[in-house]
Image (cartoon, rainbow, N blue to C red; front, side, top):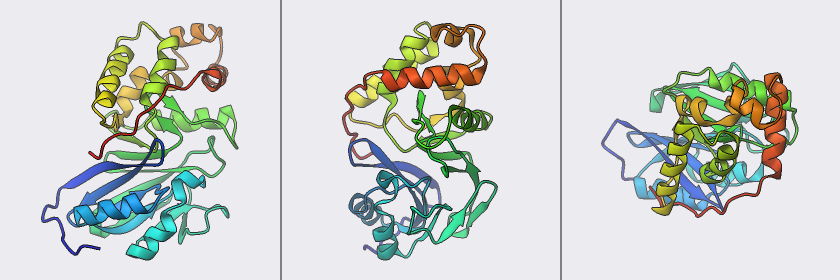
Length: 270
């Protein structure tokens, strides 16, 4: 790989598109970076070379192949340390983490908190620090992950935890799902002006081949129906005007599971 290094010490955060609609997030400072959920190695290694970056850490959120399949090849190519949840299905993890742990990366001057986020999968984790959240498949822009190994109660609790993070927190999910999620969200809150604005913005960005991410926690609180299960309009939309938030969330998730997905085009390299 190229030995060229960026002379800037400013932090840069950007997604590398892979597969159909995944993002691998890179967070760089100077000539070093961390990599989040590399489901494919070649595009990430190419971007590291193009940017003159040295990977110091690979963070994995859960065991699904589209999030981990490239991690071992990247580790071998770069020597980056691999962090991930304690799960026998992730063989390449060198440093097992669980909720409440901290990861300190001196080369990036970065201190990350590990968040336990069960629901999508049993051992799903997220990483939060310096105003940035890597949330894998737990929280999406205008949506949330499917429930594969957990329960509605568990995933709702994980989302509630994320909703309490500072509003300016940058939200970095692992998929470009904003347009598809907007189509569903607008059936739940068609009169939400923030949601309508977000959907129009996402349409413009995707037409230009650009990512719709990162989002922010404040924006998700305002527009994401899965974080708005106490709102009267959301409750009415799923026929549970007097329902508790977990019941409303379960009804929303079931409705989204039945909802047809919109076509998504891959973004250009930002």
